[in-house]
Length: 248
Image (tube, rainbow, N blue to C red; front, side, top):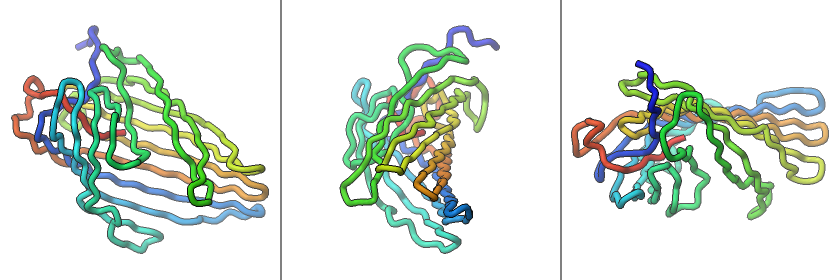
């Protein structure tokens, strides 16, 4: 049936609800020096992250995140995830904006606009990141403008979902004289707009560092998928309260 009223995208759940997400991260790097190209390394990370809403207060919610386990594989050598057990407390609003965090982190997520959206509608959002310069405490600030589009409404993974496409860049900044870094981002998110939660997200970040006679390309892919829902209430959209999750 044709949706003529549009959909409202906002994060929802109830106090005490815990969502478990599986996150898979793959990083590959390629280096070209003196006209010769070689693989510089591969890193594969798998981890599980729980996200519990501890309090809902109007348009804001307190969220406790915990990395419950996982592993890191570097060039086929596997080791335990060093951040397992780490906890982060956050306060968010229902649009997805992170208002406060107990840990200084670059973690971010789409911030949805207010009001109903129609398929094909777009919105923009700026995000600032700090790029390390190789010396302790020294970074370069780079602002990326993300362009989002509500690409479709469909049924996937057992939910009525909004398909959100995103891209940013390419954006280039000078790290030092003769050295530049270019960043480009593209992603696809499935957001369950009735239940108000992220179902899955896949984001690819491509960076290129150029210096005299040296070129380093890095591909970083993050795939997040909803693994488990523990709720004090039945999984009925009409019973869901306001709350929020961390997604991409």
